[in-house]
Length: 182
Image 1 (cartoon, rainbow, N blue to C red):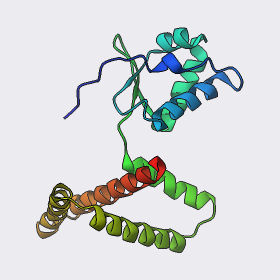
Image 2: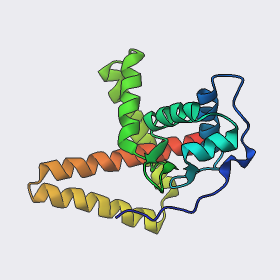
Image 3: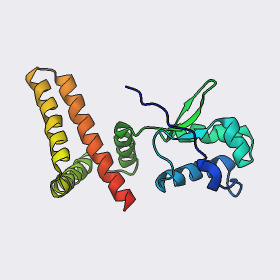
């Protein structure tokens, strides 16, 4: 079910025109910075190319380039049309897991080292979950496990695997975001 878009806001009021580096890179850095400072969140409206070009005192070309980069990073979704523009994207743990696997490969981490990392992360996640568990967290975890088990019992391997993959990706994303926020 799609969520209703949030109201447009003036997040860019504190932003500076980006001129010291490439203009589009400066815009990307400002959006990333605002996201990590908590000034922007999923569903927030950034603006259209025209809006941002006007607000930041630049042409639409660097805005368009910044949008392409931000889309490639999974930070924004761009909608076309009369009510179009850039919106902060919803999180996608699958995208994160894929990017992490690619980066591990590029820096030369072996498959064995990746599994060792997965074990270390999942053991730590289990420990933290146990220490921080509430009734609501526990009920959600039990329901998640039950859904996987129900699909295994029904012989639906594809759905069981998809649910387990999604569950692990969400756990990883939450743990990493908690680490970043500290």
